Length: 467
Ligand SMILES: [Zn+2]
Image 1 (cartoon, helix red, strand yellow):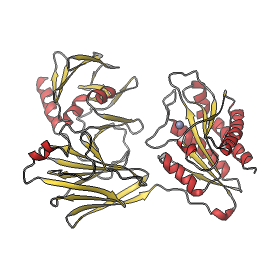
Image 2 (cartoon, protein in one colour; image 1 turned 90 degrees about the vertical axis):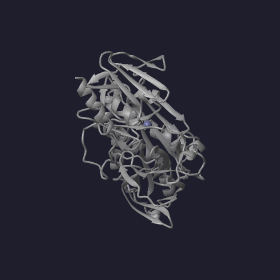
Image 3 (spheres, helix red, strand yellow; image 1 turned 135 degrees about the horizontal axis):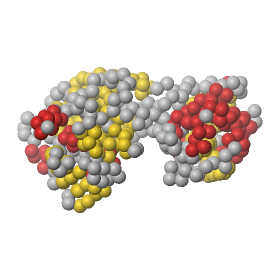
Image 4 (cartoon, protein in one colour; image 1 turned 120 degrees about the horizontal axis):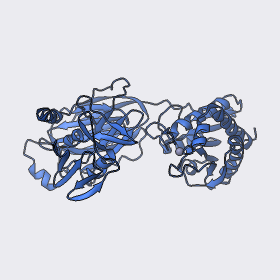
């Protein structure tokens, strides 16, 4: 028994491996992605969901962060040493000790398939990690800030021997990452999904003095401004001894991305070739048709709220919006444009831009409400922002929607929500009903109610447009 535990410990130490570039076909296997790298989970070790608590195998994660982990079989204690910090967890105990003070867990650590699993929330709070859980893909994402000192710190650079390669400048513009280094080194480049990102690792490389503002903590972010398809470019000293510089380019709304790499004038240049998610064609402006933009809220990495039976708001929004689209397509005087037609996430700014660029006549954003703490809350409400034209549209659509849904009338409200605030045409945001209320959720998820709601929304739009 002891031997196997030891063996397990050792095997857990040899963990880093890079995911192959186009990732495998859909699998129900759970995954943990730490700082952009998928952790190799030992045999059968999995992320588990225990009474709605996402539990992760603590050892694999802690060791990958290079914390010291000791498992005491007799006391069932897991002891984690993170620098000067000591965390002790006990299987079956809802309390952990962190530096001699007691911290409570909302669920006790458990042993599942010979592995101690702990709630993800504990990990994020006590180990300083940013965590995310993609329920559909069963992927836990963890982001650490390296425990080493910041790249620009003088203590760090003084440790560099003469042979260490240094990064002096990182830039991103025109779908191009440009990195200035002392000498040419071939980086390891990995493409990852959810969210789409490209991880560029420079081995045996450290930071020189970057002209970008000194990163707070250890993670730096390039100020790239507003670039379509780009969420952010971040950089960190991923490892020390030997040093390894990591640059992560996080993208959005790309259906595929490839790249070319080369050195020109001593600068490393990574050209990204992106195929964007299909965006609707711009309607012919002189067609005389009214342009109606339908915006199914959330989508892709943004699930929106969660229903009482754990369904995603984004799926309701899309299902209803597609029904609205289908009816509007039959209208000879209306050109309908969708902000999304699949489970993708256009940012709110992109939705606004789409509608404004089209100079649309009407913008309708479709959402489902939720207050999980108050499952008795019900009803339909409609938001507009300040403009009288939006208020008029809101009143008309709301009247039809309330009549069709037959739910409590929560009224038409003035609300500062980005998609209705920053759009320049009459714009409304519909909260059709409460997904956190069981009967209401059931109705909202049903085809027949959605069809009725869709017809009501179309009736409202047509009445507003006097068609
Ligand atoms: Zn929403």
